[in-house]
View 1: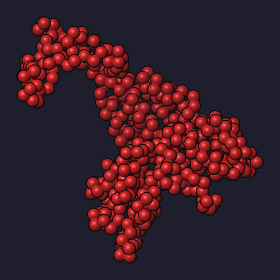
View 2: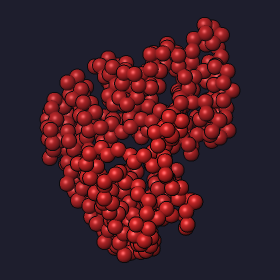
View 3: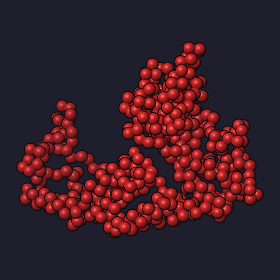
View 4: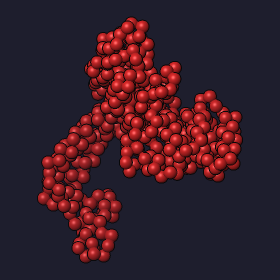
Length: 434
């Protein structure tokens, strides 16, 4: 992100686009030393890949840096605006360049999921022949949106939203490099709010800063304070502050309404969050959590429905996919409630943390070699399927000397009523055997 020498008429996000890997902020799980994308850059040999991640996390930047690193011709196609004609022109250009000097060509397709199957298939013969290296960028799950033939010929790299620390580094660079002459300083509280508003999206952050610069120049303001930021960005930011107390209060209200089995209240808070700008994918993750924490095995279908709702949103996006999330909210609210699984998980976690590392009993150990069998690994193990009722009554599955801790205690609601009956029946058989 070196200080730009390009036209000031370019958008800030374009002027500050990284010129080399050292300037890239974020994605260190791929670009760090010894990690997949870094190795790809250092290999000197480009390969076809798909960059999957949310908006503003560096997909286009990485593709451009690949072209520069490999000294390749770079052709960009927008799947939103382009079609077969653009693909044909890219093939023609790559063929000419190959004939003239053998220089590599990289064809970058932005929003590749927007191309239909036949359009995606048009790339296949040229990727296979090595005419060009294909790089696709998508915000949607490639498993659903990219056809299998093209997917099998590309490595999928998953990019993550930028962290708060990453976004703060970007703000610091904008200020230190005087990329926005009208703004000299930004107060810490305003930085925090801007970072929360950007929600992992560097482009959104930079576009917001650029709009602030225009307003600051008009009002002859050189310092961005939190109060001025709220005034300029307006009611939407005021109502929904991803990094502030109101956001966490609202998600808490939603969670407690679901737990309290009030579908109307749950739907109210859910819609409040969507209306305020909450990221639906975040909401989907929270609903999946609620299904395990507050319903658990009282209704195992709740978790499946939450996962299905998240998948539907991945495929349809907004606003169509939001209805599936709303369906999940109502289902979770009316489902029977149990925190038995959640409590068992936490109790087991705490127990393991404070307990010693107990050895696995010999009869539970695997014995794939003759030596292990000679050492009595697996000796006297009772295969439950061969026992009466598929249950080895009286068998012990804990380390020697450890009493059964009783982590999981089903509640008297939903399916856990039947689970409790089953466990009591098995417990009685164990007592009879012992």
